[in-house]
Amino acid sequence: MKKTVPDPVVARNRKAAHDYHLGESWEAGIVLEGSEVKALRAGRASLVGGFADVENRELWLHGVHIPQYAQARWVNEGSRRKRKLLLHRAQIDKIERLINESGRTIVPVTLYFKGGRAKVEIALARGKKSWDKRHALAEREASREAEQAISSRIMGRTD
Image 1: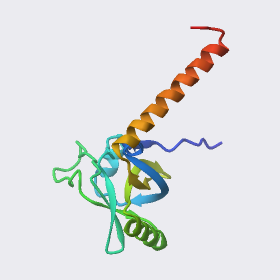
Image 2: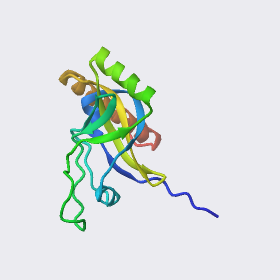
Image 3: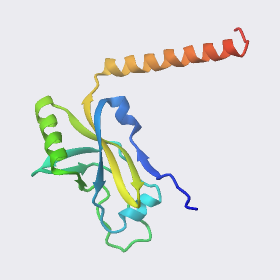
């Protein structure tokens, strides 16, 4: 009997949901070199500050930090170098069209392994204003207080 092991998530960009309104998302393969895969398997990566850009009809990931693997050879790749993303041509064309016409950007949301291959989930994003961020925090706080009040009422506690 074969056990199914969930694919490990290496990194999440929780700040992306705070800084951007996230829209449509895609799963893309990522081209890695040398010891970067071992560094990812060790769970060491950061998506904060990363973004994707279309250059010459290819999608590139910029600003993602994958640290050097300590047991690797002495010549390691750059930890914040740009990395190529693997998508179908039609998907890249659609992303390029959406970025150019609406002034949006592509941000990495999740970095994980699927079937032994490194994948990154990228999402179409529109930047939030500071008042949007405050409004989202206020909504989250209000819903948390409402849930706490309901749960305390169900438990029979009155405060």
